[in-house]
Amino acid sequence: MFRHRSHSAWLAIGLLWALGSLWGSAQAAIFGDDEARRAILDLRQRLEQSQNASKALLEENVQAQNQMNAQFRRALLDLQTQIESLKAELAQSMGVQERLARDLTELQLRQKDALSTVDDRLRRFEPIKVTVDGRELLVDPAEKRDFDAAMEAFRKADFVTAQTALAAFVSRYGNSAYVPSALFWLGNAQYANKAYKESLTNFQKLLTVAPAHPRAPEAMLAISNVQIELKDLKAARKTLDDLIKNYPASETAATARDRLSRLR
Image (cartoon, helix red, strand yellow):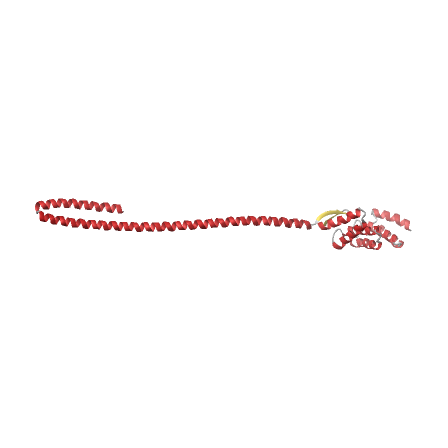
């Protein structure tokens, strides 16, 4: 826009100058030197006015262009500032996301380790299946450990250790599925240690808490043996009679009949 106006102004100036020259020549020829000088002065005045107008217009255009450039620079600077701010926010957001991702990964690893530890601890207390005296039982690992240790002493004929261990087992695990078997072997350990009254008590407990236990017939036979050792033959005969009546199909019943025939 500025170039277009500037070219037009200079074109007008040229035309005026040409006309002035022609006009001067003509006037000089017609009116003489004085009139020619006046015409030239008038033309120069008009030319100066035109030049001043063109100069003012040029200055106005330059000023307007400078203002536009300044506004553009300010807008560009504001845009650059906004871009830098957004870049900083994006970098901060990405940093937060990366930190959160690391924290989440660490949390998942700690949770996995904690669950593994809990599972290991739970397995220590989780019931396990065992077979004792022909029966499948669910017992705690600690119960199995203590019962096996007591029975290991019994198998080694260390009846004192076995008696102590089995008595502690019955006292500690009163509700265990091992208890009937533990009472049976405790009674036998006490019998071997000649603790007859204690032995009799534990065999009778077995019959009370588990009369259908596979060891019940053997417990009755053991009771009769204790009664014989205590010189109570009448009680021994009654125990053998009860054994035959209560468990007639058992192998122990045949032994009871033979022993009963010898006691009569």
